[in-house]
Amino acid sequence: MMRVNALTIAGTDPSGGAGIQADLKTFSALGAYGCSVITALVAQNTRGVQSVLPVDPAFIGAQLDSVFSDVQIDAIKIGMLANAAVIEQVADRLRTRRCRWLVLDTVMLAKSGDALLAPQAITALRTRLLPLASLITPNIPEAAALLQCAPARDEHALLLQGRKLLAGGCQAVLMKGGHLSDDESPDWLLTAQGEWRFSAPRIATKNTHGTGCTLSAALAALRPRHDDWPATVQAAKQWLQGALQQADRLAVGTGNGPVHHFYQWW
Image (cartoon, rainbow, N blue to C red; front, side):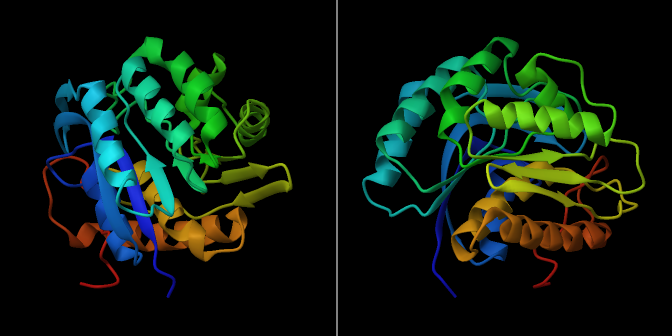
């Protein structure tokens, strides 16, 4: 199996279901070596976010310099960035240290609804990081915030918004349809080469904490091993479906628990 060094740039989750912790679990479960750069210290659990302490942007830059000066990074996943100053720092570093595969999870809200990105930072996210991304993975509320429009209420509107985001400068968009009310959860992958629909039945579980973090990390870990984004998305979603199906085997917290990242192992 091809060796992959993957880097996550994100905030923390002490309960282990989202953020840096979920990303590193995903990398390991999928056979990639995980490196990390922490952007924010987040006091959160399965019930919600209690407090956020952003890391000093200069220190985030120092972490990135440490990793890139020593480790060959094959793929990057970006998650929580907290504010515009952090976005500027990350964008400046990534512009000079190019990585072939960069997955941007446009994190704005936690599963609980708590804010993880300052509202005034959305413009910086759209103008500074989207053009650097190989793939962005917005859900419906995040896509609406990036486009400054109403959230999509059906699959047709979701697809139109995905096309608008693709025109904004990123190489590919995975529009996540989990917020739609259908029995299945449709996602749309859009690139300059075409559009692909992916669908999976909804799993009857409340344990979905960190699903977005986990999917974007899986996409970063798997992309170097696949020929294109459609094959990568298919593999990542198939693995995540299993992690959701097995989530109730865990007993973590009293709120929305995590998916089972290591369901294939234990």
